[in-house]
Amino acid sequence: MRLLPLALALIPAVAAAQSVPTRTVGRPDAEFAEPFTRVSGVRELRDGRLIVGDLRDQTLQRIDLGTGDAVPVGRRGAGPNEYDMPVGAFAMPGDSTLVFDPNNQRYLVIGPDAKPAGTFTLGEATGMRAVGRRVKGVDTQGRLYYQGSSIPALEGSGGPPPEALDSVAIVRYDRRSGRHDTLGMIKGPELQLGGSSRGNTRMVMFRQQPLTASDDWAVAPDGRVAVARSGKYGLDWIANGKRVPGAAVAYTPIKVTKADKDEWERQARSARPMMRAVGGGGRLPPPPVPDADEMEWPEVKPAFTDAAAAVSPEGEAWVRRTVPAGETRPHYDVFDGSGRLVAKAVLPAATRLVGFGRGALYLVRTDEDGLEWLGRYRR
Image (cartoon, rainbow, N blue to C red; front, side, top):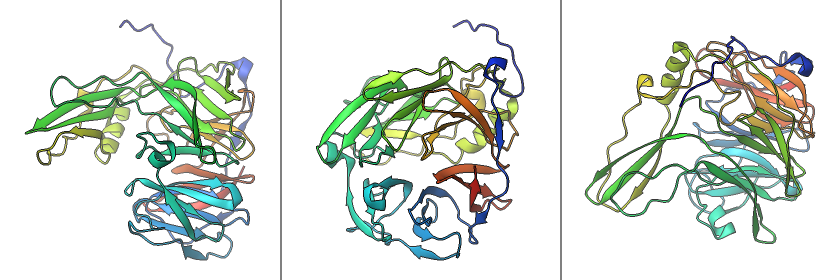
């Protein structure tokens, strides 16, 4: 495919007609005194305390940034009301919290008293083969939102690996009625496929191509879905079954450099490819770590990459933008409820956004030892 020439720059740019103010986030007004290893979910309760999950330490806690108190939530395990690996933390009706537990392939509900209040699987809930699917959002009615898979089902033990699907569905599930609805389709990630076999076991591996464009989305409390477009960059809203497109946002793409490839390779060494197996016949060896030079790279970065979209309690959509290699400050575009770009936000160096509160951002900063410190920042 022939690529059209593009003007290149070192930082994203917005057209003059779309000039908007920049919000620079400063120091935290509160920071928890104990470090985490990998914060995987933060949810602000009505009283201001937080439910916090740590992926690597495999802990769930209710913490108070004001007093420094920390109370364990439940315990690890595979029994009733137990969890093994907490991922995400979403507000549910009644000040309850929903946490995904991929190791047990189910969801844990935490009551407003910070005690486990039951578990369920999405597969049981929908009657679909959706056991391992991760919820990306919950609205104030308790409806769950998740994304369909771009990895096709495997059949048989022979033949070439299947091709990844170009588009995937955004699905909403209502636990009270048992109904699930497809709200829209989005461009899925571009995956590199490979495979191996031993005996009757066939393993197909899927690894996302680096810096390729795909759509992303997030859910507002009222159930509207914000969709960040990867084609003509901008933000759409899906509401009441209709997709309302926002205005295109002009930007100057950033050239892919060797530093980007080196950074990707370091991250890939700690990531696992998605795998599916058919048949039986023993374990297969782990896949080799990819070499950056063996991957297909675009000339320029997309406006954003995966897991970029988030929605605040007030209904603002935040989209994390790509930045030049070596830039440690996260940059966000902020959109209103009509899909209009209204602001840009620059976060402190070496931080990442893990949650929103009332008028607040929850960020974790990573220190030189790789430990994470959770703080509340005013916005």
